[in-house]
Amino acid sequence: MSQLPFSRTKDRSGRSVPSSRLSRLARFGSMAGGVAGGMLLDGARQLAQGKRPSLTDLLLTPANAVRVTHQLANLRGAAMKMGQLMSMDGGDFLPAELSEIMGRLRADAEHMPQSQLQAVLDLRWGPGWQDRFTGFGFTPIAAASIGQVHRATTSDGRDLAIKVQYPGVRASIDSDVGNVGTLMKMSGLLPATLDIAPMLIEARRQLHEEADYEREARYLARFGSLLADAPDFIVPALHADFTKPSVLAMSYVEGVPVESLETAPQAERDRVMTLLITLLLRELFEFALMQTDPNFANYRYQPATQKLVLLDFGASREIAPSLAADYRRLLRAGFAAEGAAARQAMLDLGFFDARTRPHHQEAVLAAFESAMAPMRTPGLFDFGDQSLPAQLREQGMELAADREFWHIPPIDTLFLQRKFGGLFLLGSRLKARVDLRALLGPYL
Image (cartoon, rainbow, N blue to C red; front, side, top):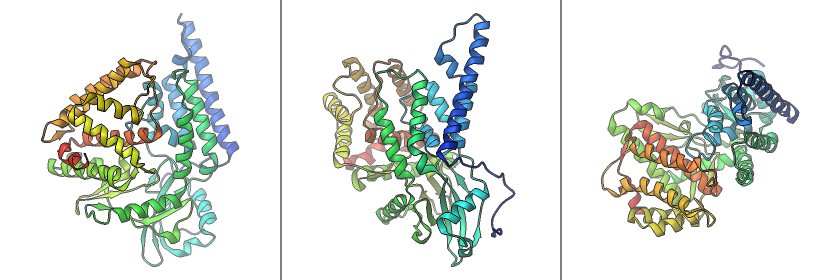
């Protein structure tokens, strides 16, 4: 196939994605073998030093962490996405050691080599697809767990961003999730009483949804319609003629990473964070639809127009009216400092259940009270003040240290909490100051 204008073939060639079940299983086997070999060597070394290492100590060495993350990143797809879902974006329940392994997967994936990309597009668009373009950049402008994004110019002059799914992703989801679940159990750090099966079932469901680019296309168009009255936001336009179940075409929109605003004037940082929190509240209480992925890369910013660009709607979830009502009750109780009402709302949301010991329930309520107390005072909430995150982290670590408490909330609550946590982390990164009480007031 001849090169098209704008392609950049001199960049790094990329790494081919294992697409067959057999090849992916072989990578997991290679990973397991490498980890086991590392454990034997480390164990022998420690025994020679007169130490008696535990299985957990041998498994969670830095060298083994590198082996695991390298293979999961190379597999991409569900294997890498599972690591990202369990990383430190704000919804953790895993021990720090295992979270560190998974957290390494937040970086961009390696992209497909050009030959594999061409084969994928030949299959999806048919031979001769290049005749529909005057330019196509073969080196992606972004690469993540499930697909990579390319910029292209169509023959009729449209400037597009085209997301292409890695081959074999859909077919490997179930087996990849099962293998990552086995990795979690192998760690020996999860209590035997902690049932991760519901999370793995939900992970499979969500990943199948995220791998359906036609589904994402519908949510892209839906958010564009919902935010038509919000001039501060830009949602790329869908281009359905190039969109397939594993290829998503949308208008290309310029923007810089939202976290690059760290050095922007205080007023600009405050405004951006206010816009994002306002959007979150509209998603929860008005749209009954939320984009739940807290990855910073899903937001871009245009300094010239001062508009926020919203990307990636694969993780969009419908919000049940009962769930929104439970969060409204929780916020009302928090602002009114009504402990009994807050306890009931947290019980309904699944932060704990009826079997949770009273002192554990009190610990969760104490953390909630710590988070709400600053919001009861009128005025600006300073995300740059690290005293509250430090206090919440300490309270959370005390709970996490008690294996008898470990509890996974319902999936819908878990994903919403990840989104809330992700926005809090962004606010802290930007050191923004926002009148949260004023924003929340209309929804209480």
